[in-house]
Amino acid sequence: MEKRVIVVTGCTASGKGAVARALARELNAEIVSVDSMKVYRRMDIGTAKPGPAERAETPHHLVDVVDSWEPFSSARFVELAEAAIDAAHARGRPIVAVGGTVLYLKCLYEGMFEGPSADPAFRASLRARAESEGVEKLHAELATVDPAAAERIHQNDIRRIERALEVHHITGRSITSLQQQWGEARPRRPDWDWRWLGLRREKSEASRRINARVLRMIDQGLEAEARAIWEDPRGVSEQARQAVGYAEWFDFFRRGGSRADVVERIKINSRHLAKHQRTWLRRFSQVRWVDLAEGQADTDILPQARAALGD
Image 1 (cartoon, one colour):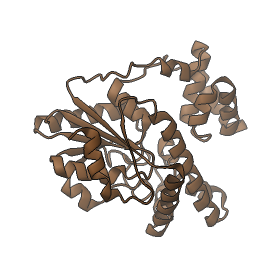
Image 2 (cartoon, one colour):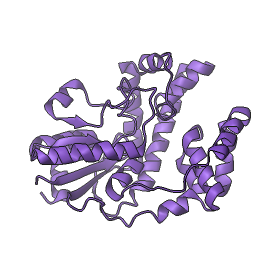
Image 3 (cartoon, helix red, strand yellow):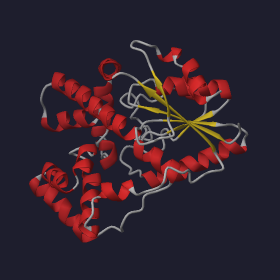
């Protein structure tokens, strides 16, 4: 039990956070968040971050690690997550790792995808083109050389678009083809007792839950939270700028428009994120999936989760 790492994953709004906390209470475990946006301080509402009471009850790691103007990488995530897991195991406590950031899950389990070294001159040329032609033009170019990468990378995510185009420029191959050869679904930390649990809902039910959660976030003050980050004189990092629920408000603050349109765009982009997660999580063959019924509450999932984990 002491070296156990239970991974709880699924699409956004699937109920994985509630299940992870319930499992952690039962097992006297600590929680590691596998979420590329929960690492940012002050980005609370839009990331569905666990509240102070939940975090006081169960230790949470990789939450509120950096400020919204600071960069954060998958390599830094793995470094911090491994340290947190090893420390919890040293205390005799298992880990529940919960989240849906596929790249972080893959890096934690299999190790980092290195890829070719950066080409600063080529990156500078891409950044200049993004300024003059627009990021959308670079995204369209990526779609011609690596359609799969263009599908999973948001059209405003300049950092990841740059990297994908850079890899193609250097190697003559798509980053997708290289990543498909990365790892063999074997843990780089075989000393940990890995268990994988996935929560799955019908697409219509998942969309209903996503739309309802977006409206709750709006009621909780998501616009004001996003504005405070946007108006911070220290700026917003490229990664934080892409967060669904914030990117749409940032665009509104820059260009104006209709608040109702912002809310609809957040719903649409959240559903697109769920589609991306649904596609890529299928590649984790070690996941034991639990299919959840329409309207099934998060608190009712625990018996199915225990059964899937064999506990």
